[in-house]
Structure formats: structure tokens, C-alpha cells
Image 1 (tube, rainbow, N blue to C red):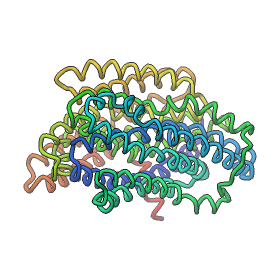
Image 2: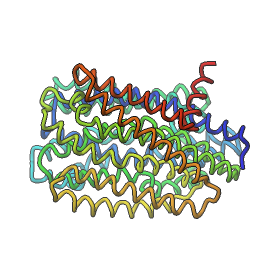
Image 3: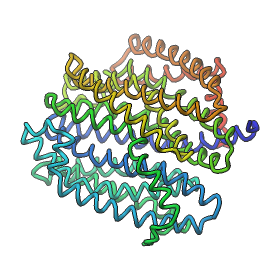
Image 4: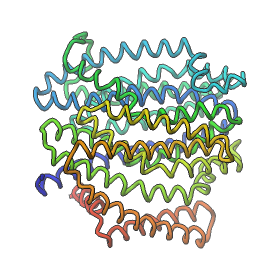
Length: 521
């Protein structure tokens, strides 16, 4: 068993890194809400909005499959291992070879995706074929934005290098730039196009360029200047590729399920794609703010433990990451469920986005929110598999989850839930995914303190229920308009949750608090 000092150090390291990422992610998500408010105001839930969300989803899914998802989880463990054993000189060589290979592959993918754009749209939104306006616009926007995968791919490689060496600020700040450029382009460039939504798509490309450029100074500082190197026979590259192929599916099961949801949703009435998109944006706020931040921050720590064969340390790091994730996601889930309609109305209900759009989006958000703990927990467990260089098991589990999501989606979209049924199917498959990940992992890795995780889960759930009661009482009884009542309810709920967690002696609250204090001293 690792020493108390080692446990404290690992927990603090993860919390610090996750805190840095969470702060930057909060800024990015807030700007993302502003971006979506601008899109809702300008385009609402009409054909232009549906076409943009479908076209933008394609490079986004590819980003998770081949860049930020598969590339990061396969590159970081291998790269970290070489740094640990052979030092920076070998690390630089691996980076240059990987950069060259990735650039060539993604350049080809971008060309093919752009050229075969009509075929791509028929696959990801087959229902659009019956609506020439939405279909033609989606094809055009897909051609404008498809090269985003090339830009975000090389940015993701830079992210993997920097995070392996403990740099989290620049990697967390990169997504902020994407939202800034999308907002600016929607407001400033769109009026100059016959089809204004094209200006928004141009902003996606500009943001992709900026995401890579912001990381260059930090790479130069460490001597990792991108240079062509065709030494593709290097064993590290082969190792990354072997891990990456199955990781492209296993690490991104949630995004694949979202894509399946979009395919099915394309057969529903106009506006359904947009309702799901706006709901997913709110759902992604707590998920990206902390859950993804923890999962990202924990991968280097888990990789180091795996490389040094510290099995007990590995188990405790994983346990803390799971407990910290649930500590945030359970109250977030209840908060989204209770305040979904007033939150969505306050943020989006203006311009061409009407009251009916708020109600339909709230229905989807309810169903998405139910799966928040499962999606978040699965992300952490998948990182543990990849830290151990096991990519096959997550693929098998992802296939099962994929099938569950598809069958559930087809059944639920036919009933009264319609688009919300598709969101509920995503949540159902997320719980199946998490359950299988945990069951198989617990059989292979001994010593994971599930007892501590369960106790933490119970304490967090009690504190979250207390928080929910406070939120409902304040929101219903407080004076003022919706904005004031929301601020009071959210503030009171957070205070109530922290107080309850304190009296329940939550270890996660104590760790976070001690980390904050240590930053000040």
C-alpha cells in the first residue's frame, strides 16, 4: 500500500491539474454558452441551424475519435514511458515522427472528407435527403469545416506532449480560442455571406489554427519544435498505432452514441437536431468542467504508476479520481434536472429561439442529465485501461454499448418522447458501458478500494439531496425575476452541498480545500 505521503501527493497533483483544467474549461464553457446564445439568436432551430450542427458534428466526432480521444490516450502512456526511461532526446524524436505521420494521415482524411461530402452527409443525416435545403447546406458547411480535423489533430498531439510534462494551462486554454473565433465570426463575418451560417463555419477553421499556435511557445520552451521526420519504423510509433486503432472506438463511445443519435434524429421533424444540440451543450458543461478535467489529469499519473509497476499506487489514484468525479457530477446532475427549464430559457430564449424550443430542449436535457455520473465515471475508467495499454477491452464494451444505444434509440424515438427518447437511450447505454468497465477491471486489478468509493458515493448523494431541497425552496420562494432566483438558488445549493459534505467529513472536499489553500501559500 502506498504511504500516506504518496497518496496525498498524488491526490494533490491530480487535483491541481484538474483544477487548472477546470478553471480554463469553465471559461471555455461559458464562452461556449455565449457562442450558443449567439447561434440561437441568429439561427434558432431552423434549417440553417440543423445543417450547421450536423456538419460541425462530423469533424467533432473525428476529433474525439482520432485526435483528443484516441491519440491522447494512446500517445501519452507511450510517450511518458519513454521520457521516464530514456529522457527528452528520445521524446523529441518520437514527437517529430508522430507529428509527421499524423499530419500526412489527417491531410488525406481532410481531402477525402471534403471531396465526398455529399456521401458523408447521407451517412450521418440520412433523413436530410428528403429536405434539399438542409441537405445542400449541410454538404456546403461540411466542406468548409472538414479540415478542422487536421488542425485539431496536430493540436492534440502537442497537448499530449505538454500534459506528459506537466503543462496544463496552455492545453486547457486552447479550446477557449475556438469559442472566441466562432463568436466573432458569427457576429462579424456572417453578414458578408449570402448564407450567413457560412461565416460561423469559417470561425471554426480560424479557431482550429489558433488552438495549435497557442501551444507552440511552450513546445519551443521544452525543445519540441515540430520538424519533419519519416522514421516511421520507430518502435514507439508502432506501439502508439497499435493502441490507437482500437482506442479510436473505445475511448469515444459516448461521441459515437451521440452520432448515432443524430442519424436517428435526422428522421424527426425540423428542429429536433437543434434541440438535442442545445441540450447537449448544457450537459457537457459539468462533464467538461470537471469530469473530463479529472480524466485528462489522471492519465499521466496512472501512466507513471503503470510504468513503475506500482499497482497499489495505481489503485489509489484511480479510486481518488472516481470519487472526485462523482463528488461533482452527482450534485450537477440533480441541479440540471431541477433547473433545466429556467436555465435554458434564460440563456437561449430570445431572437428566433422561442418558448416551444425551450420546452423541447429541456425535455432532452432531462434525459441526458440522468446519465451524467455514468458518462463521467466511464471516462475515468477508460483512462485506467489505456494507462495499462489495454485497448481491446474498451472496444468490446463500446460495441455492446453501441448496440444498446441503437436499439434503445429506435424504440424510444417512436413513442411520445421522440427526440428526448434518443437522449434517454444515450444515458441507458452509458450506464451499461460503465457497469461493464468496472466489472471487468475489478477482476483484473486487485486492491481497488471499492469500499471507500461506496462510502464516498453515499456521502456525496446525501449532500446532493440536501442541496436539491435547498435549491427548490429558494427558487420557488425567492423574490425577483428568473435570473435573480437562479443565482440565489444555485449559490444557496452550492453552499448547502459544501456544508453537508463538510459535516459528513468528505475526503474529496478536504483534498480540494487543502489544494486551494496550498496555492495561496
